[in-house]
Image 1 (cartoon, rainbow, N blue to C red):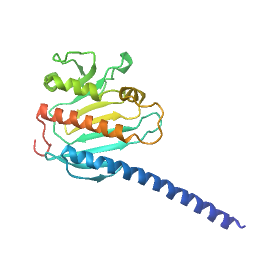
Image 2: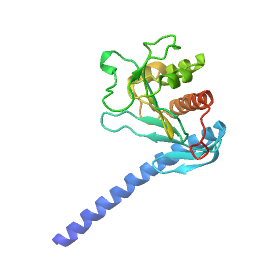
Image 3: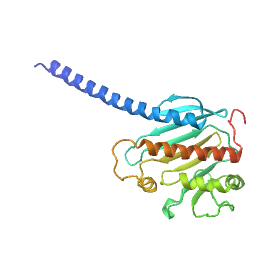
Image 4: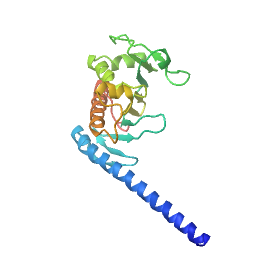
Length: 220
């Protein structure tokens, strides 16, 4: 067998393997999108459609919205990210407290604030460039309850930016599995858990938008 012939066989083998991997990824993406499309339709999204990188995009009350599933990567768990393109007059970042080591670095970005209208101030790390705005967010008692429901793992964050609300949650983190009573080891996607997390993210997003009276930044 000549060297050229052997190289051709090796190239063909790697090419077929590459196509097989792409097919498996495409099937996973298709399954995820088929599960999420009916869900966001029930949320009231208009014109929901498949987007890049395993995401669903649409519109809600004139604002662009998206829901993206991200797989596990090295030390980062599987995640689900909800984004609402809305205008906010101030920045607010909320994470769950997990001891002193969980305290965020504030060298860059807004400082840590302590809204006086939160019953348990030791529950979250809250950063904002306007304390009054953060207090306005937590004016409704159910807001803190929904934050507690959504912020479980150390990767979880709610980030309200001037032009975007982003809610990011871990799916296969040990703390999440413990909260939902899921087995520590599970092969394949836990679609039921993903749908539950997506629903909780959306409920919180709607509550934030309505509490603060946010609108799309094109209309603000």
